[in-house]
Length: 250
Image (cartoon, rainbow, N blue to C red; front, side, top):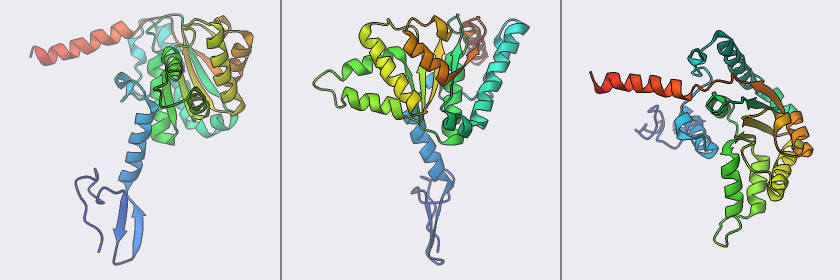
């Protein structure tokens, strides 16, 4: 006799353990809720900001850009993100990522990178980690406190070895000597280990303020993809507010 299904299984198939036990046949099988729970844990680990948590590549709206030229550029970037997921195994073997850049803040770089990260977790079950460069440097500084539960070496190892690292806003940090050495350590480690890194930046690789060692490695590690120099953040916020007004004032 099979075990009873309970409400703790979202599919009402198993008892919530992720295992289907058939006592009559003396067999055990995985329930589909097991994979769902693994994805949830991976998404939690990924630390993708809540505002981007449910975003998909498909939902990346290229129509919010104001000109046909910008819509076309955004569509190419969206297509590249989708093709990256479809060819993930090849990209992982090569250790190649993407460098999303645009001179304008709010142009959709982080939104598309986060959507790509979500897809890699849900479709490819990849271990993804999202962090801004500012938060990364703060996390490293925090390891210097006596109360820290993790050492700098342990944190750097985790950052260097995760399957996919989304490094958001590279270029905003001040390239002091210790910052440069930290970045070189991480980027060189990921390049040598052929780990995928997704970058977002407000400047192309060659205009980063970092030294040539770092820029040369990023060029080797990531395909540059340009998004339109147009802020769509306010356009999206306006649309969201209009949708909410229909709820509030109906």
